[in-house]
Amino acid sequence: MLQIKKPQFGNSILVNQCGYLADKLYRFVWQDEELNFAEADESFEPKILILSRARYTESQGKLPFDNKKQVSRFFKLASNQELNKKVTTLIHKCVEGQTVYTQWRWDKDYCKGWLTLPESLLFVQSSSDLVEVNTNDQTLWCTKSDNGVHSILANVLVNSAERFLVSIGAAAKPVIKVEASSRPILLLNNLFHVGLNNLASFINIPSKAFIEASFKKGLKTTSMILAGYLLFSSIFVLAKQAWLTHQLEGLSAEVNTALTLQNEVEKQVALYTSGKQLLNELPEQSPFLQIFAEIVPKAQLTNIRFEAGRYELRGQAQQATEILSFLVNHPSVKEAKFDYPTRKSRDKDVFVISFTVKQAGENS
Image (cartoon, rainbow, N blue to C red; front, side, top):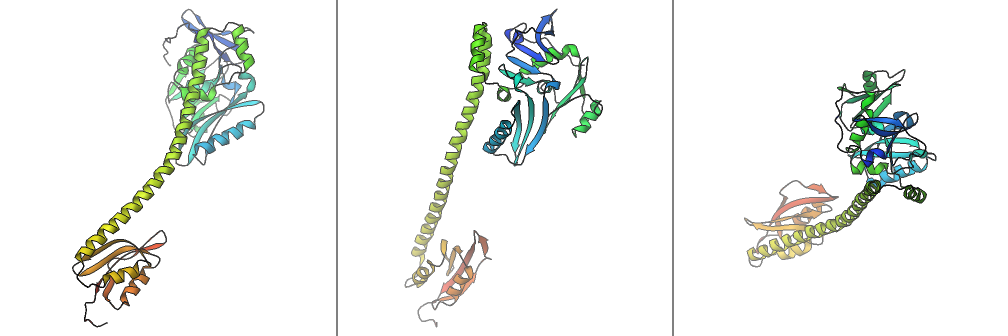
């Protein structure tokens, strides 16, 4: 049995403005220090409406992409195709090329207040275990997993907690039982655990007529503050997220350009440094400069070294064998060879070739 404490909000305006729609519309009321359902009269218009499981459909799904713009466009198109239903989607994660979500559908007539919420979402906020809610009519099972929120009312096929877990492909879980008398207080307690980002998905944008009617009926200040806070905080979060995404996209292009330029500059500086050092070490009357001038149009050199009487060239070319062949057949070159096996990089051969030059008087 789940033990539930009396909430901090007591007999606050939030309790007075919440409704529960099952076979009929109920309001939350305190009776002998217990929160219960009481049948509402026709004038009651709750600003936060909680739907019983029989009032909506629930489904889970995965999309084969995780781009936020594509995901948003997909759900907007799906929602526009529903003429008489309000489609609310809660995204659980967007990673590794997949988007995992839970979707709820209910009649648009249930969207007259500020928020409309499915009770299964609220029940799973208290625990990741299996929640079994017992009522006078049917038993409701709810749980959450990496694939979303799952719930079902008892029926001929699914008539036990074990069968429910099997039907959603979940492993055995501890069962938390909630009696009918605890249902109202658990729903309102868990409302505070949903989180503003998730609540934003369930906001009903109010019409002008609804706002005017609310003021005419003397809507209390606290209720307006709560509704405004939920609406504008969610808009702020979404706007800030969109702004940051836009800034990040712009910065990414600039950073990539700067990194490419920096990489190219570093290569040129390294080539210049190695060339300058080589010039200081060249023997007098060395034919290397003539050889170097003939190689430059054929290859992109990244490093030049002179060590132990041998010249070492590092770089890349369309065909490294052409560079080696040129050096082998050059009249001023001898002992040209690859120091390391060549490798491919962006359709070019990366090579390390070393050679010596013939001194004056040597045979060609």
